[in-house]
Length: 397
Ligand SMILES: Cc1cc2nc3c(=O)[nH]c(=O)nc-3n(C[C@H](O)[C@H](O)[C@H](O)COP(=O)(O)OP(=O)(O)OC[C@H]3O[C@@H](n4cnc5c(N)ncnc54)[C@H](O)[C@@H]3O)c2cc1C
Image (cartoon, rainbow, N blue to C red; front, top):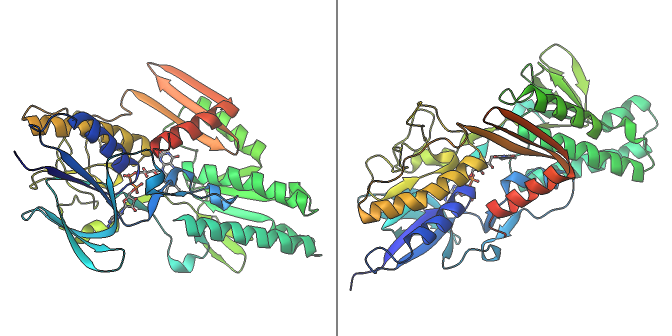
């Protein structure tokens, strides 16, 4: 009788969860009769639904889901923050939830420690939408501002208190702006303020929104944003916010009640001390089957992994969609490696198909471009599709 294998997955984000499910499914009944025990190791007490990070900026919503509420089975959850991987000894060093130094042995290891939100310099003011706490702080700030506005006699000051700027116009900035504009108008109305005095400016450093999408989608999106009450300023960068005044790169100062930064993602900075080989941009160095260079039985996927499409050398994007695709493929790769067969190799999910959904309050925009067809759908259905995709990615259904 051979001993059981232990598969440790570090990080229960979208990549780690999908990998766990897929490896469980693909390895069932193989490994020469050996059982595989699965352990999910994450520093947080639950799965953080990053795709819904913008929600608590507008309404109360719990976006950290306790591990035992996910639909995953046959897995042990361990809360701990990984410090390093000791590949010669095949073990992981981590700090457990009591703050103690601990070690865990693995036979198979998946590193999926993701990314963090890029922050501006501290002297640039405002609040960056980095985590659930920041989202809640944002909500408290604008609500307090609207309450002050309801008592304010000076029309200029009232207008300032009813104004928000969102710096950064990626999907996160778009969704946050729309959600806030809708929520603030509603709240303004309830407080007896004029909802049309609410202003949400979204500052886009580029000439156009989402350069990778079609003109048709862009036009629809811009029209929908106007309907939500968002004013998009193109070619505008926020420089710094101080005492209610936001300096822009064209010399103008915008009076604002609050400035929110949504500047995109950077790979998990904790990777630097983990002992894994890293690329120049700080991601884990892997081959076309997500195997970490020079470390047997260690794989890495998702936002933290420096995956390159072997066909065209393009680096993959840091998206939930890519993370999920990689997690799915990893199941087949691990199975092939265990059986000593050739493993399937990575190819970018978006090379022959582009699709995404953007939530705009209860509504949304769904876009798909495949085989030369450019399809855009707006209204409530895309909003529902987005919710369904998110719930599936978070293993809630
Ligand atoms: C505000 C926001 C909006 C977004 N909107 C979209 C969108 O609309 N569409 C889209 O496709 N993508 C979107 N993204 C990007 C998407 O969320 C990421 O691409 C996705 O989360 C990547 O998944 P991941 O599992 O690789 O990493 P993550 O989701 O970052 O998960 C990493 C996990 O590792 C854990 N971890 C980290 N360090 C350690 C450690 N040292 N020890 C133990 N555990 C650790 C973390 O706690 C976390 O659970 C958005 C991101 C943000 C922040």
